[in-house]
Structure formats: C-alpha cells, structure tokens
Image 1 (tube, rainbow, N blue to C red):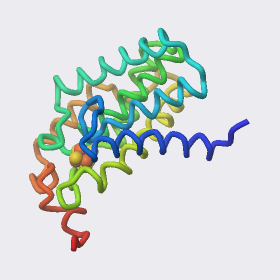
Image 2: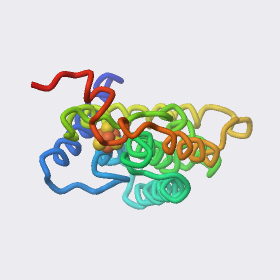
Image 3: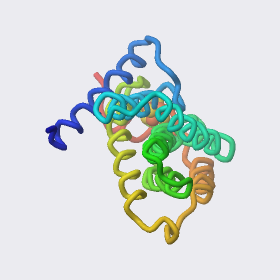
Length: 201
Ligand code: SF4
C-alpha cells in the first residue's frame, strides 16, 4: 500500500526526469512545448506503472489531451513568448487532467471540466526563466503541474458536472486575452519577475 506522499514523490520524480532531459538538450516530446514536456509523461507513468492502465486506455486519454491542446493552441496560444507560462505549463496541466478523466472512463463533460479546472487556476502564470534557461522555474513547475492535473481531475470527477460554472472555451478565451495584455517582460524574455528578482552571479 503506497501513501499519498509516495505517489506525489513518484509524480514529481517523473516530471523532473523529463524536464531535466529537456534542460540538458536531450530528446523529449513537446506536449505541448519543450518547457512543459514533463507534465504529461509524469501522469502517464503513474497511470501505467501504478494503476496498470492498458495501452488502449492510455491512447484514449492521450487523444483527449491532444484535443484540449489543439483547442488551446487554436483559440489562444501555447507558447510562453506569446501568452506566458499559462500557455505552457497551464495547457500541459489541462491536457493531463483531461487525459486522467478520459482514461478513467468519465463523460466528455467531466473531461472538459477537468481541463477547465486545471487551466483556470493557472491563468496569468508568467514566463520569467532565471538567466534565460529552462531550469528555474521550469523544471519544478512541471512537477507542480503534474500534481495540479491530478487534483483538477479529482475535483471534476467528484463534483456535479452539470452545474460546473465555467466552460473550457471561456477559460481559453481568458487565457488569450491575459496573454495578449501581459507585459513582454513576463513572456520568455527573462527581463522581469523571478528572472530579475533572483540575482544571478
Ligand atoms: S517558465 Fe517559460 S520557459 Fe519555463 S515552462 Fe513556463 S513558459 Fe516554458
């Protein structure tokens, strides 16, 4: 019997592993981007290794994730330089949350709600990589995104899906608006935020 701490440690470790591969310039799958590539693999590993979901179920979950990523990309953006990190880690988290709900057999409405919850609470997330590298805050942010995806799916699966107030489309629209109005200092330029407040020697 594994404790919740053990699951969280595993989830964090999987996300770190992929994000560190990306930071080292090695091979990763952009899902939806390089900087946010650790979220979905971390969740897939948990689903496969610890909940023993078969390959067809995982594929079904990945298709749901792809649909969420496509909507976000098409209607707002998924690049930190365009919309900030809400479009990278935020969308990766939404994709992973949808994947979890779909792979557990929940309805399309629950899948949408899972993605919506995951993205809604990352609106406004800035991209301010310290020294311009995808190490701080990106590596740790992948682990946080993976955990958030699990919680978003959990909430969506346990609420009344018919009374969920916010649609995924509305959240994506808000993300696009926030991204367009976000100061360029916070969009992958490393000219503001954490990149400036943390002194690099
Ligand atoms: S902080 Fe910037 S570079 Fe890092 S994952 Fe987020 S959007 Fe990508």
